[in-house]
Image 1 (cartoon, one colour):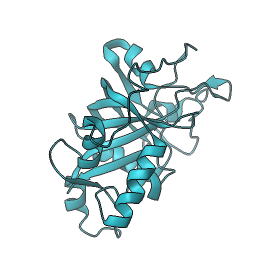
Image 2: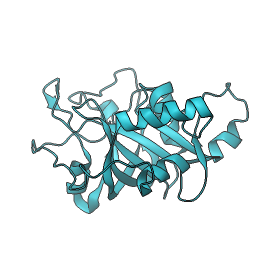
Image 3: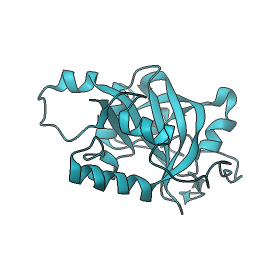
Image 4: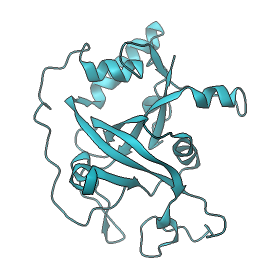
Length: 216
């Protein structure tokens, strides 16, 4: 989970959120291809240690989830939407609070300059709101040692920290909001026909807050 905002202002809807939904839009195409004008697929589960290096090298884009609506946890509002990222200095923030080992490992594989889709989760209308880029590779997540933080982990030690984070920078809003319902439609279509989104982690590993996409 990204940084906790101290302000309580609600994120605003992007002006193009109600634009006509069409499969040919640039942002949907980029999601399907991993990069423009190239075919790509979301990674499927792989056997442990099998072709690990080859698989890691194929990671090119990411999907990262965060909550755009206020939710109080241990007295702290964990809300952090794409508008909150835009409001930070240099539109840059640390993506802290990830407490799933697989999601953490994916962040450790991230490289500076790679793009990630900012996905709004646990809200009225979940879906992809915009794009950001990785500007600092994985380093120690300080929140694991902060007893006042909702992500404090007493089992993690300073000489052997468990959790990592990366820094991300806002790039742009998607030309229109891409809702979960639309993504599911494409996933089911590709699952039936063998398309690049047939193994989309958003549906095959739905609980992961950080998910990879690969160039195919």
